[in-house]
Image 1 (cartoon, rainbow, N blue to C red):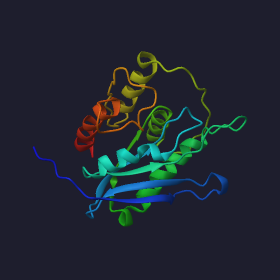
Image 2 (cartoon, rainbow, N blue to C red):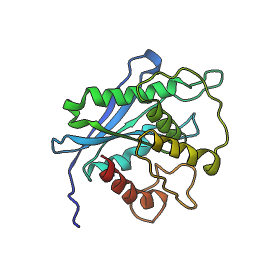
Image 3 (tube, rainbow, N blue to C red):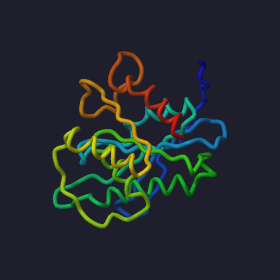
Length: 204
């Protein structure tokens, strides 16, 4: 089946929080036509204290060409003696509130919002999705994550809470993958890309 290809529009460095030193920005990618389009809020990885929204540049283009908008967000990083949790969840919640409240000007559908992330960004996105619009009220300790003991039960819990969840295992993938090229030599990102589009088409 032929897939429609869209021209894209990119707006960089949109400020979506106004909290002084923690003010954060995002890059917004969308199909050129007026939509309204479903939107994906993307949270970058980087070991909790590194990384940037620019790692989703290729994903923004890839998804916008296929009819999905993407808002690639910054988030506060962990610093010595300055824990970012639970504030980092607030950052992602603020990004979701921004796209929802600016839906008309962004040409997106506020009822069709998804989240994605890689590495630490994946955990942050999942937790922000589970919390929803509620404020984070307690801290949690970090830990080594096991698929069997942690990831799979957490995905099942999200499903029981009526979230659309699909696990995609990428054999031999490196820890960080969002910045990997989507075209050219096959790799984890290029293997994931078409599967992600099919999942978004089914759910959004």
